[in-house]
Image (tube, rainbow, N blue to C red; front, side, top):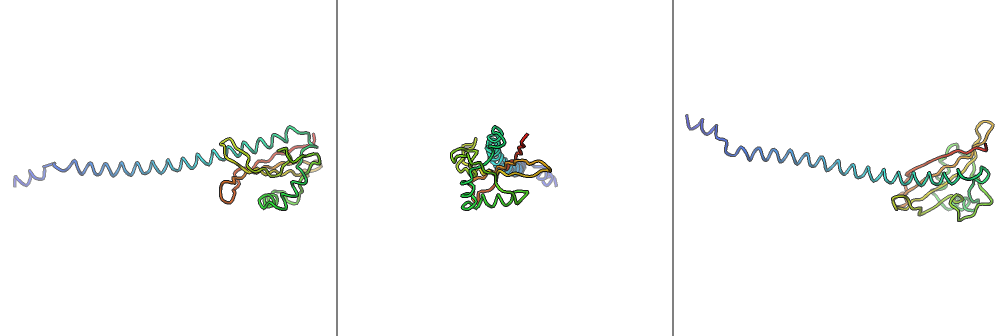
Amino acid sequence: MRTMLTRLRDERGQGIIELIVAMVVITVAVLALMASYDEAFVSLHKSARTTAAATLAETQLELYGALPYASIGLSSSLVTTAKASDAYYSTDETALTPSGTTEVTNGSCTTTVAQCMPVQTSVTGSDNKNYRVETFIRDIASGSATERTVTVIVRDPNTSGTPKIYTATAAFDQG
């Protein structure tokens, strides 16, 4: 009987079991941390891309803020070309609200100035990646006044489907 009690109280081998349990717990914890790091990296990448796109859109809108009201417009020849040959531009224009308005063009716009171009490809963002910037300028009646609304859409041409990353709109009035 005494030898049986001695064997039951013997703790040899107990350290290995505790070590294996501790290793399993630590492994699960490390795997959970690795998954959260992966999520954080993806989230950080998306937010950096959105920030770069927002900066591009705001820069484009600032170009129009510096112009007199009558000078806010796009090159009519470039708008015609974009509507006819650019599927993204024509689809985005159709989706704008309110619908049924036409693009405001400016006869003195040249094709080399950024505020005259409805579509700019390969615009470099603050993250040194290229983006596509689309600009829409429309007159929208608001009661007895008319507002000139500028909408800028920034897309990522490096991603399949060229998804929209950021959209910004600003309204200008004659006063």
